[in-house]
Amino acid sequence: MNKQKGFSLLAVILIIIVVIIIGGASYWLGTQTKPAQNITQQTVQSSSSSSSSIVSSVSSSSVSSSAKPSITSVLPSPALIGQGITVIGANLSGFEGDKNLWIENSAGQKGIIYGISGSSTDKIIRFTLADRYCTSDNSYSGLECTSYIGIAPGEYKIYASTPSGVSNKVSFSVFDPMITN
Image 1: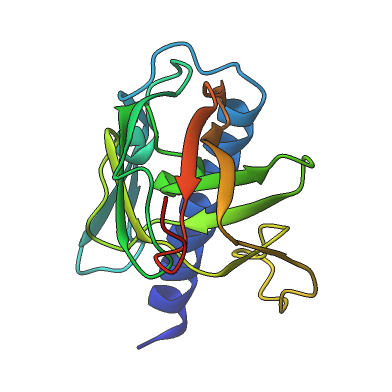
Image 2: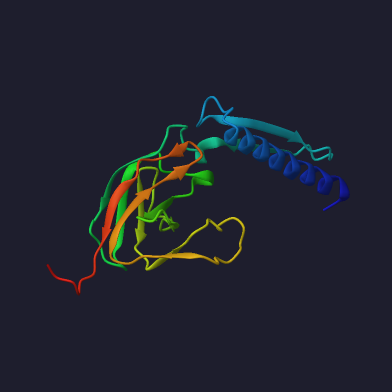
């Protein structure tokens, strides 16, 4: 690749990064007025004699609507540690399309639940109930979790928190199969 093509490609990459950053910043600042439309389209003509062009389009299709998330059901409840759980609601997609939930115990301690990749939508999040969850979302930092909330038999609240707001908190029970009524 000659230097001119290398500089053109670098320029295109930098423009895409700037567009993504500006689009993300406007989304986070609440200035995005029409979600799910194209943010911008950039056409960059190569200055090489081959007159090739590179067209890049950044679409906000991964950005969910600006409506507040809501949860209508958590199934099954009660549930066992290790059991598959399905949360049904609306507007559950978070930042970058994340499908995360929070679980909170009666003392107000909370942990993050990451939805199973590929099995979740804007209306459904699936996960396997674990015996502990990290108390902070480290998914973008790459840092290891240093603090956990333990999940034991008892009552919990499950909710979604997205850039559009926090959903309603839905009661969720964890039970111990060794304890009988």
